[in-house]
Each structure stands twice: as structure tokens, then as C-alpha cells.
Amino acid sequence: MAGTACCEDKKTVSSAVAYGGGYFFLPSRPRRSPDCVRLFFIRDSGAGSKEDTDMKHLFHGTAALLLCLTLSGAAWGADTPKKGLLLVAFGTSMETGAPAYEGIEGAFRLKDQPVVWAFTSNIIRAKMARQGVRLLTVPEGLARLAEQGVTDVIVQSLHIMGGEEYAKMERLVLTEVLTHPDRFASVKVGRPLVESMRDAREVAEAVLHSLPAARAAGDAVLLMAHGQGEGRCDMVFAGMQGVVNETDPLAFMASVEGYQGIDQVLPQLQARGVRRVWLLPFMVVAGDHAHNDLAGDEPDSWASRLKAQGMEVFPVLKGLGENPGVQSVFVRHALETEDDYAHPVIKTSAAD
Image 1 (cartoon, rainbow, N blue to C red):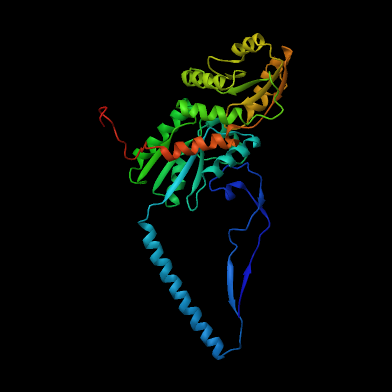
Image 2: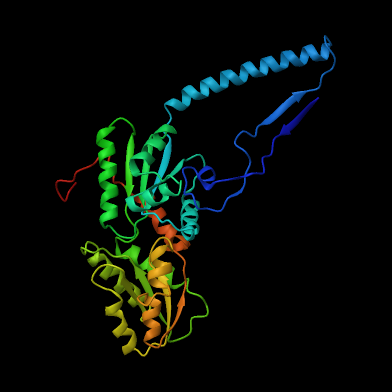
């Protein structure tokens, strides 16, 4: 008589196990143990019985068939292309970044396709290492996918604009392709969030339409971007800022670094007689900048500076990665990319 038995391990496991390579700050949850297997057993009918002998023959025959199928499947799978995804973010050391990373991975996750995370910030990786958490670099992430038998990789940047961190990611991917030319059949790279006017409009619509219903007429919105000290993203930022303001005349952008800071936006708010401001991070995660530089109690935070001008502030501390409309832009970039670093196509004329 056949039956089933399964060991159900109710202990919680880290998100590193639950999410394939995964980010480590997702809440731990009960999960079936990886050693949990379904067992089929046979009732003991007594030594030497005909039923026992017949069942043994059936078992041995079934086992042999399964072994043959397994071996033939392994041989077949060896020549079958396998796709995998490397999600590359700057990183954060705060648990508040978990919902954004979880949302992005959920938007990307496809059946039987490995998803691995890597992080470009040396500072974040070192900080997490001191806390006993190891985050992968881009080369380590690619190696992890290769270990899982992936032949065709999409590397999707989760950076906002094509600044220094995105350029670093590109250099690392290219170096790996040159160092291991036979590792993958293709290595395609998806562009960062905001590159085109289509990107800017879709992101602006997604962000501004996600504002709380409590926003009243006359309330302003101020988005905090990161920016880049040397001005590498200033032109893209200016374009994004223009689209945001065009979409909503009372919506503004400023950055922690770069040419357009809070000092440039304060006079615009005052000129319009704004009394209430909604504060949102224009960053993938609501991390340290969002909680401290944007909404913190320190005198130099944006919230404190607005309050000092007599304005009431309403922080909405959610990263862009939590927004389904923003997630869809990242997914579109991954699906549309033709930038294959393993087999680059160089156009030499307009006709190519």
C-alpha cells in the first residue's frame, strides 16, 4: 500500500535562501526545508510473499526507468540554452530597502530562470560584511549564474541614471566577458531607469499617481534624487525634472549632489506660496538618504529646512522600486536590450 511522508521544517530561513542569491533584508518566513522530500513507501506484506516480490520488482523497474530518464535529461539539458538574470543595484545597509528589492525581483521572476543580485557600492558591501552579511559583486554574481548552468545572461541595472555606478557596472561586466570569453553564449545589459523621454514620462506618471489621496490642491511635491558630484547626470536630471514639472506644475526635483539642490528649489516654493510639501525619495530604495537627509530631524535635513520656512512637510518614505510602474520600466529595459557584450555589434554607418 502506497503512502506519502514529508518532513515539514517550520524554522525560518534567511531571504538569501528564499530569494536565489538574494537580498538579505527581506523578512524571514516559514519555509519548507530544502531537504524536505516526498517519500513513497510500500506496506510490508510479510517476507517472501508474492505481493512483496511483485512490489520489489515494480520498485526496481521504476527506479531503473527513472535513472535512465534522469541521465538522458541531463545529457539533453547540457546543450539546452538556459537564461538567467543578474540584478545590479547600488545597495543599502538599511532594512527599509527590502520592500523595493522584493518588489523588483517579483516583477522579474520567471519560472526556472535563476535570479542573482549584485551590488556596486564598495562602501555598502564592506559595511554589510562587518555585520556578517556578504553581498555579491558583479563578477561574483556572474560566476554564480555560471555555476547554475546559465548560458544566456541579462544584466539589468537598477541604477536611476547612467552615472558613475552604472559605468562601473559596465566596466566590470566587460572585464568578465573578456576574462571568460567562453563562459556565456550571450551577456546582454539593460539600461538604467531613466534614459529616454518615454522612460521619463512613464516614471513621472507612476510616481506622481502614487501620491496619497490626502494631498490637497496647492500642496507641492519635492522629489529627492541622489545626483552626482561631478555633474555626470546633470543633463538627464534636468530632463527628468522638466518632465516631472510638466506632468504636475507643483512637483519639483532636487538632488543630494549635483547642480540642483534644495537651495535652488526653496525660492521656487516660496514664490508659489506653498505651505505644504510632500517629500519623496527619487531613489530605488528608501534608505539612509531618505530617512536622514530628506526626512530626518537634523537641522540640515530637507524636512527641517522646509519647516524653518514655515512649511508643513509630509514624508512618504517608499523607494521607487516599490512602485509597479517603475518596476515595469526596468523590466522593459531588460526585455528590449540588444547590447550583447559577449558578441557586440559595432555600427559603422547609418545604414547598419
